[in-house]
Amino acid sequence: MLRGLLGLVTGYVVFAASAALLFVISRHDPHAPVSTEFLVFSVACGIVFAFLGGYLAAAIAGRGGMLYALAVAIAIAVGALVSLIARPGQGAIWSQIAALLLMSPAAVVGGYIRTRQTQTTA
Image 1: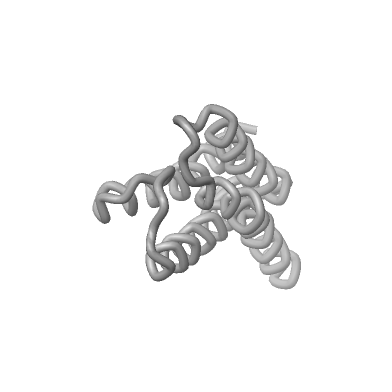
Image 2 (image 1 turned 90 degrees about the vertical axis):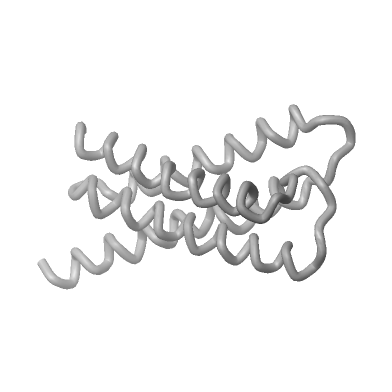
């Protein structure tokens, strides 16, 4: 259980920290309209880091790792929903929608792949 919680926290931090860093370094507001190039780049980065977060959560958790990858996906989705509901003014919602529809499922896929790897090597 402790390993699972560590996996969950690590997986979510990998995703959230990468997103925060991307927006800080690029000086973009996640609630503002952006160029198509930045939108595609940031969504691709989000998918990769969500996948990595789910993979790490499953790897660290060990047994029952898929459950913790799913928890990372839920945390990503809840964060996006909260941000969507509490968004300032009528800002753009592209980052929240991408997190809900693409990044959250990517965390599940990451956990699934890690789980499959451990099943075939065991």
